Amino acid sequence: MKHTISVLVENHAGVLARVAGLFARRGFNIDSLAVGVTDDERVSRITIVADGSDYTLEQIEKQLNKLIDVIKVKTLSSDSMVSRELVLIKVSCTPKQRPEIISICEIAQGKVSDISANSMTIEISDSKQRLDNFEELLKPYGIKEIVRTGTIAMQKGEQTVRV
Image (cartoon, rainbow, N blue to C red):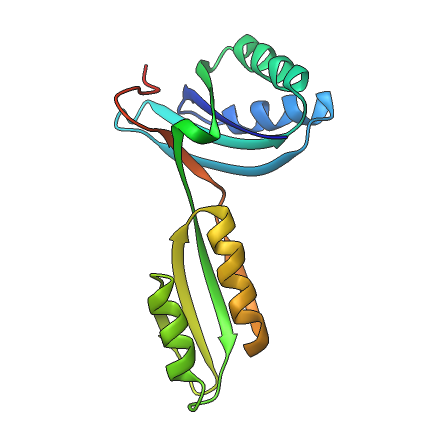
């Protein structure tokens, strides 16, 4: 089962290496990792998506809470969070195919970021599942390159993960 963990940490050198090292030492695999500063420049948020049982999740939380630089750890349930990824996809296309690809892009609420003689680069931000579906729609045209960010997530409603 996939788990999304939001970790607030002190924003200084080496913190990400210590967090990633914890996962490596324990044999936990990270499916997605995204890091960015928060509204307080002294604090960063690490969003981790990891696969494992509830017991594994409990162990991850306990180990993260032991790290000195960790301020707060919160597991976000799929029904109580908003999550997004950003993807850039470079697709092969002829001038005749451009309108088709642009139409797919508009339906998926993507944006054409670059056009060249034989390719288009599209950017789209959405849930992992919708991005996977979008990628499948573009495969017949020939995907030349794809880059995805890690998942970022935030709790829905009034609840927050803050210092």
